[in-house]
Length: 299
Length: 270
Image (cartoon, rainbow over all chains, first blue to last red; front, side, top):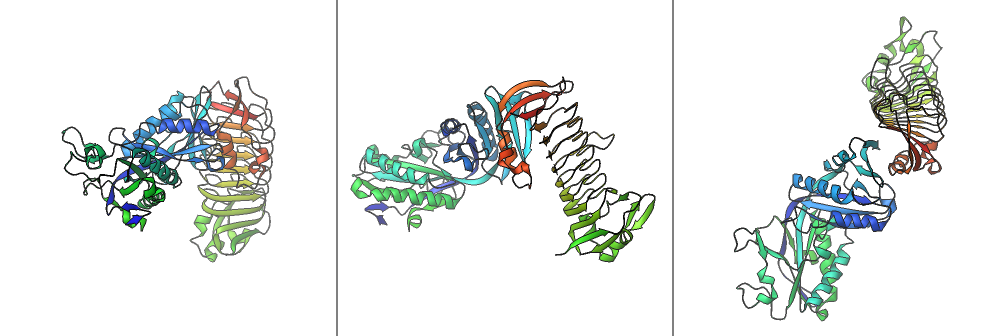
């Protein structure tokens, strides 16, 4: 398949089951909601070493938030429910509770309930109070700037992590420009996050390593400087840079949609802007049961 | 569907225990069985059809017409459905209610909504003492749900209130929120003496400056984030509580009762 001169490989991205949740952070203004959201989703690019994958889903207008203030929706994904709950609570406690004027609300009403402000309330040292409003419990925790309002729980649902595609370009600036265009479009899709810095990862990995202690290592087949030294390079001579976009989402449909608009945005730049191919992280079935076939998505 | 309607024929001299006439009990009964039910009236037991003309058949919606202030225990432990009462009601209306809604197009006596667990009780007129309170000797009042009073309330509103919301458009009497354990009482009118006497936790929300006991301490003026959300939750009500004009988030906060735990609060609009 070729779109605007860009070859879409006959391959699939391999993804794996995760547990996901969403939280809504509000503040006096969008600036401070974003600061809290960025702090809460920091150091959360990959479950390999961060414990979770997290990102900002989108900015919310005051009429979309429970308390009528500007807000930001964030999503967190982890391999299991326990890990997710721990990450959520730790991050909420250290990054949102501490952030001036912030409040924290559930972003998913259904699912299994996991603590959001339920345990953070103990920071109130007995002065915390709860209010049940429209069937939902909120904790009011006295803090030095006033009160930190946090919903007791949020919903944990089954999710998918590791959807991805690779952008293969003639140069590094062209690869990055294409990824930036893709991310801009993908951020408009609900229920997904792209957890890596700016949504783009330049160090895509393969499963396994020659070193026993490592579960993942550099994806040498797509490293342009190894074209002549690795036995299994997947790059033609004209490709000088490869970047990857990783997507975590609540459902396969959500990731499908995000991949479609992302790949389309890259293809819109086309061969004339140095974009040669779109490929995907295919690990031969070793990584996970969810397969996103690029050509089916773009059909 | 035609609502199951009980129209009072004549007003008996003695008080009537209306507790058998609740939706979840009558749903299983035929019209003849409903007519034959016995209601305590003073020391006598009267058949339903001796007191009321019964019409309609949808037991999920009960209407009581020509009601007056001696019909006690209307909607006692109601477990779903709706009861409309045209006229006044006696004591213990909605006592221990578990689910559903009761609307009284008149006034209610003492202990309305006492120890109710969930659901909604609306009273168009005034109510007596111990609204949403605990029965004498009990330690826990209303545990959930919402009570809306469009008129004035008597003394001891929300006595031992455990959870839930009591909204009063008019005035509340003395000892409003006494011995509150938690929950919310909002009074748009004035409040009497000994407001929040012995309250442990919970919120009393006021539109007018109260007379406060010495055991309440001023915590200053604050903008509280939960208040807009609380007011938003009243939006569905047919009441001034649903109006944006009456909503606020800036309050003077008084903590108390300091002779008790002192974790309760009286919030006064500023």
